Length: 142
Image 1 (cartoon, helix red, strand yellow):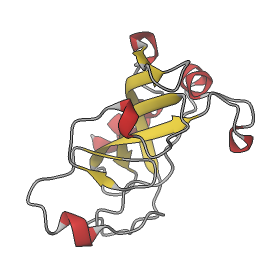
Image 2: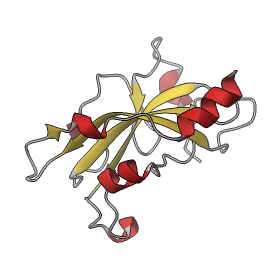
Image 3: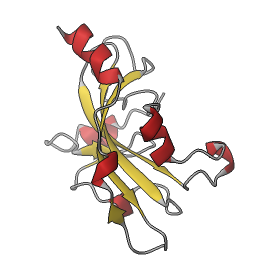
Image 4: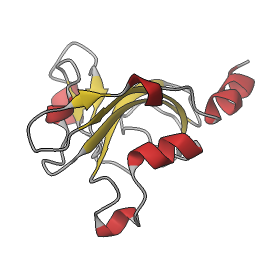
């Protein structure tokens, strides 16, 4: 479950454009360099939906290509290929009647970025796909 950032969102009239991997609202266009993890070598922008209210969000995930101890040797690219990439809970935007700890549907990879150095990001559109959970969302949304 993420922190409620209503101290920020209630002061800004526009809706956040995307949310980072810590559930922090972002109001600028997405760029991989804006991910919360400054050591990231992979960054994805996902389309997700709250599993209860079905509200959709664009969220970022970052990783170190499977090298970080929490990644168990599995890169974000491998998670995408297996259809098993997961943002977990939706951002805590304060308006879901069922609360902020409901899980989410991981619908699509909107952008996938990787860098081999700490400077140059390269986009790989072949990993920008609709994910298997989209069917569950579509079935529920009908």
